[in-house]
Image 1 (cartoon, protein in one colour):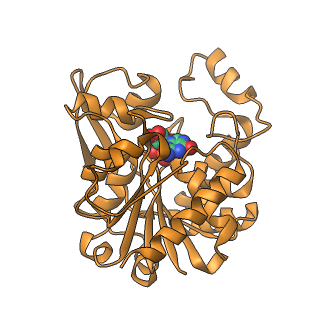
Image 2 (cartoon, protein in one colour):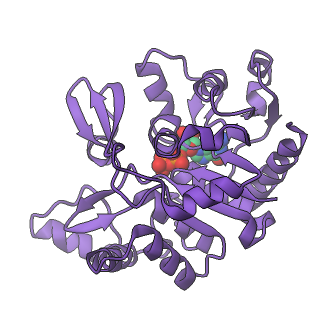
Length: 305
Ligand code: GDP
């Protein structure tokens, strides 16, 4: 079965990892949000792409969910000592990725080509593609003004109150070639339990909706028992005047999905969801959890018309 997974960083990477345990390399393409990408210290940084690739490669830091395992922090410590910006934590091994990616971009390679080459070097056999090779930048509109995504997320620790989101660059951004081809040949699309506002919506904004509609599309709720497992998703729902819940996640995606996966703790709430719903454990703490959830999702997809 050919599957496309739409993923942000941490939540997306976990489920992509589970799907990769079951599906053959030619059966899975992970399309990754690049709205979080930014330039920092003169380097092109693509946090969600790296989180997905490091996770699939077995190189991710299991504690944080981002960055590399067995990391050291010498470079950033020296940058701090010199008075440079150290709020965005870049480990020494991770820095190599950003240095080499920036060099290759300057030589004219696309982000898609670079990601493919890095995946090969890291032993990642499933396809990982950025949503677009053109820049799309998520802007968080807050009570303190507009903030570039990483400024809001990392530098300001998601403290400013969210009023809305904007994706700059959409006008000229096209889906990356591999992303469009994968969608067109996919039997089903899995929206991973990533942040709907800032991880999945940018991807859905770049990929023409009519190419997704008509396929079986299943989303996994990142909100469990009214809370996000990690990160600001629930806070964003609340600040936008929407009660964070698996139900409001289902409503958020109602024009795109024909099935939703919610956690067992939300079994009562699930009765109010109007589309086919799979209720199961969706907390992924280890590779078994990831694989079991992926298996159940693939079976659930088989039941959808
Ligand atoms: P980010 O770009 O690193 O924030 O990554 P994502 O958007 O992919 O992931 C953040 C979202 O993943 C949050 O809203 C979390 O609630 C969700 N998440 C993280 N781990 C899990 C998990 O094990 N299960 C579920 N259902 N959601 C998760």
